Amino acid sequence: MKKIYTLIILVTVSLSIFGCGTKSYQVTTKNGQKYTAMGALEYDVQSQTYTFENEEGKQIVLEHQDVDVIQEKKE
Image (cartoon, rainbow, N blue to C red; front, side, top):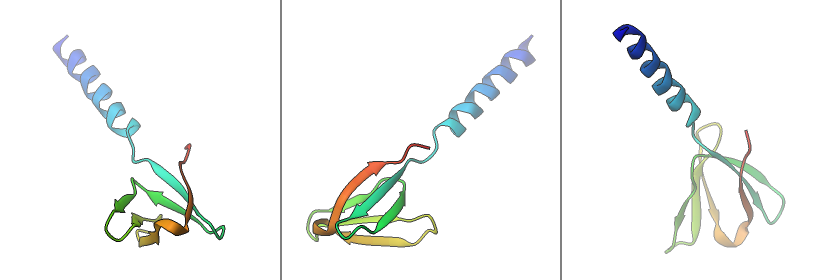
């Protein structure tokens, strides 16, 4: 009986971990260029830039004035 409870707990924890994946965001610039940000974007107030990592793991920096829309992607 104790093994069954342990198994149930392990399955529940595993599903919780896999169900809480990293969110991704679609970033569209004013000139129509689109990026996918893996994880949250960071905004630097001093330089007024957004920094994020794209799908290939490359760091992208966009100026605030160039960004038109940021929206969460529905998986």
